[in-house]
Image 1 (cartoon, chains in turn brown, cyan):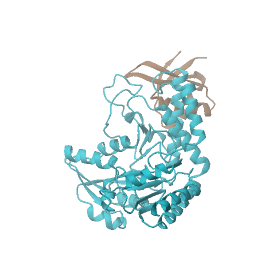
Image 2 (cartoon, helix red, strand yellow):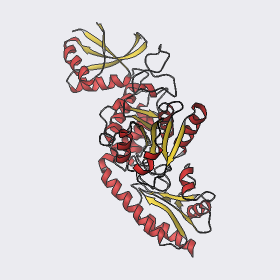
Image 3 (cartoon, rainbow over the protein chains, first blue to last red):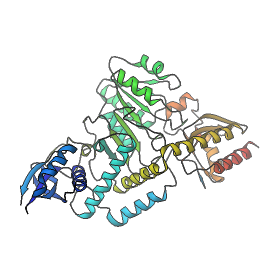
Image 4 (cartoon, rainbow over the protein chains, first blue to last red):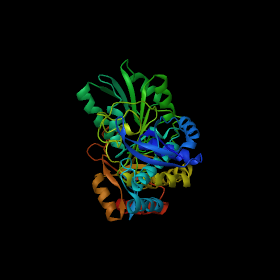
Length: 71
Length: 370
């Protein structure tokens, strides 16, 4: 199973996103990245099979995210 | 010891606040929003929970509109200096604290801003409307006076501000924690409050609630924990107004304080404080030589004939009763009640005060009058 990293920007967004994903039954891990376009950023790692549900949850919360990588 | 100085800072704090604070400092207080290790993440989670608690308390949907400052004064400085435009005009009440007056005076000198003061004893429409000019942009007002306890009708104030398309900045320093301020019913643009008074947190944090979500200029710039190559503060809230390390223990204590208030209920807290104020007012009025200036919303100011406020307060300290004397950083109201030169003794209550403590105040003042 692949892991997908979704960049969400600030720590506040990351916490908000992680809580919502956990409440939605999607396991996630909060990580910090240092290769974002403006420097460091917070991101959420989820398993690739959860991407669609995760995307829906983040959109409903109004959290902008970008798909950084699949690994 | 009888503590009647809750308008300065509340004491004691609820046991749950002390436990929360102790757990934070002992077990997990990392730097929130800087690293990705468990201490940093846990601290950030706790701060997020406090943001949620503040948002719920004041009836707003978006917790990102809640920024944390170091106190209400800093929040008011940001609110005023980042909102009031150059050469514009503001309206303030005659109840305002120096945390409103001094920033206004500074931008008056630096940016040609002018301000008018409305009489809080008049009906709001009568007091404010005549002061509105073409260049008026903002109303800044305390919800409750820290000297007389006088409460402003913020429902009416909000209505006037919206009708006249004016930005409304509320100083809720003496109201938060016992008066229900629901911004979905009583919209304002910005609300400021400290952690350490009615909200039962410790000193070191303040609330800057940007209820209109509008991104303004910043007052302080520094590290925000992400987007390090940007040379400006982030555009998004709350990070835009949170430069530097947040006061995590103070914010955690604020969250615990709000939880405590919600567990008791604002109505219950308000009722008790109202009852204590009315009892203390009646008790003080019965003492010959006492002159009362105001008694409402948990705050009473008075003087004793022939005695300066500081000497009276000193006498009360010897009786184990702690109050505050002087001008309470609020010059306008003291000029209005003609206490320039003497100040006033202020007694202020929290949910933890008791009628029996007010009885001790009565006996102390009665001894003085004899």
